[in-house]
Length: 287
Image 1: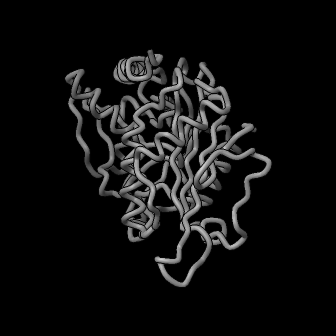
Image 2: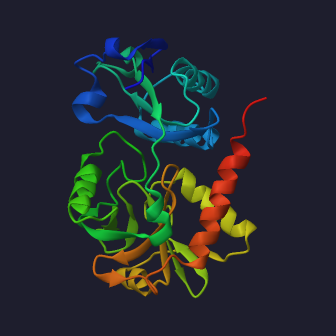
Image 3: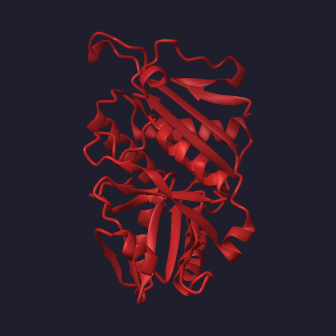
């Protein structure tokens, strides 16, 4: 547990940090969060995280008066106060205590940081298994495509997956289109072409997803964003998952089905290597 957290307008001791019992994020999941990582004390693609946060807040009426400069300074203060350089950070923003009008609303902002714990190295060497989620993504839900604190269905699906010794569970929409993982975006490789569900599926516009799409262009890897079905998933020669902590995680089996030849594929290996290089390049130690 970190010693210091940022709550609303300043640093406080973690043990003394409290939110109101009437906080709408606590009571109703009326909030957003961002999971970020830092390297050498520099937050990877911080601008993209904050852009996504602000876009979702505007769309879902999460009212606040914070700006990027304030949040950037707040995040840095949490890293510095806890003497962390390699960290996993979480920024949570809720509508605060329930109020009669938007003008009366006082949002809750909480930023925490802890030492970064990466996935086991063998996951990247031999790949992981995923399962198909027993639940379905309702594309008419207003929170679809946003990283909200209403996250229990994802955590439940992930718990069920891990009970089967799987690393992730893949969600499909109610009309049977491949969507995303509980905590990740998903990519397929077929005939050398990289494929991923469109953002309009809808899926979360992942920061790591965006980086991989950019890397594919740089590496002259053809990328197609399209509606994908279970048949596409099972016919893929390579499958991998992305988020900023997971990076590029190879999938070698989908329940009892073996992906490709059961080994980590060349496109996955190349994109993972480039992803790690991107982290090192962007997160150089400050002068």
